[in-house]
Length: 207
Length: 275
Image (tube, rainbow over all chains, first blue to last red; front, side):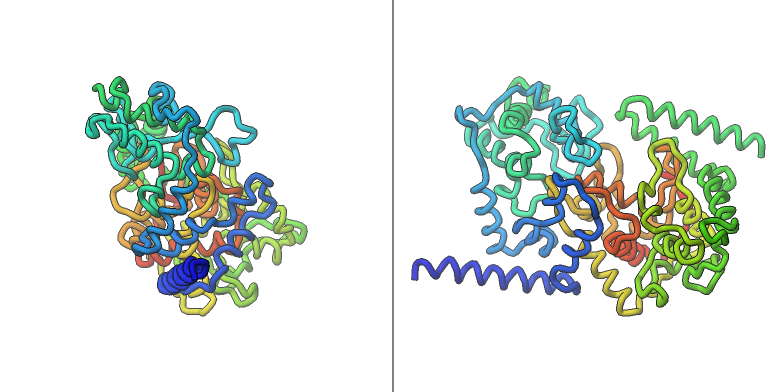
């Protein structure tokens, strides 16, 4: 019985997401996948896995990023389980390096191979962060004074790390990339990004 | 006329130098481009994209390819050789190909069937690099689009295959993939948002789609060439960290069909002018 329950729940979730997919789309299952596979012939080996979706991508696409509560919880739980924590238990790195990676949009495009430098986080593309940088996007919320507004609390430092590592662990079907889980940024880089947001000395909080 | 050409050239140089400076001046750039757009309305012949449109017209009429014939018998949907207004009804289902096709995909077909070109060659490096002029097929597409300028998008999408393609395009618009989990909707499904300082059209909303889709193919000031819609999508997928989108692929046609459906009723202004 104990063994069966998760199976039943999983089956119910599958039926649930299939129903949602049907509701949202008139296209036969698998048509989009097949079209995508055919649209990128001769993709380099490194890129082939990108043609497929993982479970979270599938569920978020099918629900147009608005998953019902049960599905949202399922996604959140699964994504949270992918988070790897720094071996030394410290979440705050160097905010100056964090600022540099927040500015950089380099990495993972087909023109970025072989890699000439570390991937960037491109945070400013979507967020206001420091006051000095006026060229920022508005797809995500403003992060100006992020740490100050949270009193630099330890729990928030950890939560910030988790959010950058895997945004879906905080907000299922978030538009933000899963920087850690998808290996866009390293653990050290994520610590630097946390420092940019959560260090009292960072221009995010100081100015 | 001479005066306005010189003035446009001066503004072009002005815009180019603005591009060289910090991104912080993007708002100023946008204003400069808006001024440029206004001048184009006053003197439509000064649009650099029209040079490519003219080149496209000449290419359409010139005997070319292994069979050494022109494209003048190419059927863009309104009958062989009928170009005016054809773009306004594309993409559409073509019985001879048993496929829905956008303007560029249809041109691949005509260049193969009428002129004897190898389609594999046409889709190999089909888009220009920065600073290079749009390729021949793109120039022809620009002319065809311009032959519907002033008209409104009036796609029918009543054939079952057209309906399927539009629905597939909508699915693809929301399909997340790649290491960044991006879909088209990541950037284009809300109003009034920006990436850095660049405004993003809300393409899932017909009101905004009608304003921008009809500008393509468009002359891009930042890359100094005409960019076709197929090239635009290729560039979006590049940014989404996906591989190189094949020109004329079903996915590309489906996305164009979806965007055109969203833009139905919007005016065609191609070639437009983009930053």
